[in-house]
Structures are given as C-alpha cells and as structure tokens.
Length: 341
Image (cartoon, rainbow, N blue to C red; front, side, top):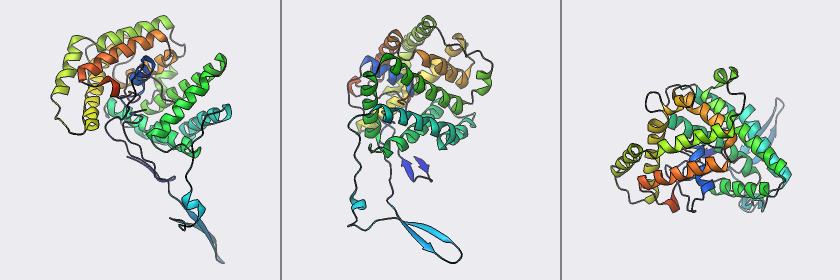
C-alpha cells in the first residue's frame, strides 16, 4: 500500500494479476518488460484502489487570521456528493501530450521524484522488490494524472487510458509517433536513474550513444536463450510445484509470478560468474541490470527483439504452470521494457 498524505491517495497492490486477455506477441514483450510487476497489469499486480475524499471548504474569519477548513463529507442532497466522473471516450493531441508532461513533472519535481530517491537509498534491497516498488511509485504517480481526467482511479482506469493512448498514437504521423516514444523512453530512463542512482555510471559517457539494432537483437537473443535453458525451466517448474495450493486462482497465480521473478532475476540475469549482465558489458549486480534496461529501452519496439522475448516468456509461463490466457502481464517484471506513458 502506498500512502500519499498530500492528496489522500491510497493504492493497494494485491499479489496477483487479474489480466484476462489473451497475450499477443507485443503485449507479452511489453509484459516481459516493465516489471515482474507489481505492474502494469497485473497493471499493477492486481487490484488498485484509489480513495478520493470529498470535501467542502469552509472559511472562518477572526481578528487574528482567516482559516480554511475542510469537512469530510457533503450534504447528501448536494449535487457534488452524487457526482460521478466520466472517462474520456478518446484522447486527442492536447490530452495525450498533457498527460505525458504531467507524468514527467511529477517525476522530475514532485512526490514521484522524492519517493524514487528514497527508494534508491536502500542499497541492500533485493532487485525484485526494488523493481516492484519503483513500478508502484510510477503507477501511483500516473493515477494522479489520469484520475484528474475522469478515468477510474484503478487498474481498469490505467488500462483504459493505455488502450486509448495506443489507439490515438496509431493514428498519428510516423514522426509524431516517434516523439511519443521518445517521451516515454525519457520517462522510463529518468525513473531508472532515480530508483537505482545511476548518475555516476551515466556521467562516464559510456552509455551516451544509443545501442545499434544488431547489438540490441544479439543481446535480446542471448537473454531469451538463457531464459529457456533446461536448468532454468526445471528450477522454475520445481519451485512452482512446491508452492502450497490455494483455492483462490489469483493468489496462486501471484505466488507463481513471484517465483518467475526470482528465478529470472537471480538465475538468468545475476546468476553465474560472470553473470549475464556482465557478459553483455554492464557492471555486476542490480545497477548493471538497471543500466542494461536503460540502454535496451531504445529498441523496445523492434520486432525481432519482441519476438525473442515473447517466445521465451511463453516457455517460462508454461514451466510455471500458468494458463497463458490468464498469464500476468509483466509490466512489473524486471526483464526490460517501458511502462505506459
């Protein structure tokens, strides 16, 4: 749960995902990307609840001061107490750009920045946990923006906005689509930089030049190949088979999802000597992983990179005993990828 006192925002993240759509290659790639989630979909691992307080302002004037106070409720017959916001039926250019700008504002100067910096100070936090909390912070920040436009302040609202954004961007000129992708990539990289304190590594200039598409595809293929190595799939299957059964399928899915996260991070990316991130030219440990995602973000939408990742994710889900029709989106899974912007 995230408590935001200034805006009375409470977000509750369940441990399982409630996605019910059949994953496509593109959604599974984006799934394999943003987060062993608490994530966008799971958009957030499960259920999001946003408590909107209603308030009435009352002004009391004394000789000494003027005080504004807020009561916690409105009279039941007041039209404002019965107000129900309605989400936009579609996005236009002004709205799409405005939401992106607002997200960047919160990330650079607001509570999002403050929380991510606080997160970065815990150097001993496991990578999976830090990644999930980073995504929770991002989604909480995004909820502030989209809720102000009338979207439900929940997982469903985030998904509705994401779908409408994708639909709108698809109608734009290619140059405009590139601009939206660039803003999304910048937001993602700023978030990684803050959460993992990457300033020193980025200041070296080593990562200034974008990775070439051939190198990106080779890296994606190497990651995908290691994900489906027999010992990785066997370990995943064994650990999921040892989980206690649960009558709630969402709880059971959440437990399996956690196992996937742990195996992928600790066995695929960070396991071995040298680890996979080191073999690919990055520092060892969580910072090396974060830098890899920072660099690979440029080729998020490359068809071949998407194909490599989605095909390996299918095998991981199968090894975990997950129904692919209801498998969690991995916006929360630390495997590379951008959150919705």
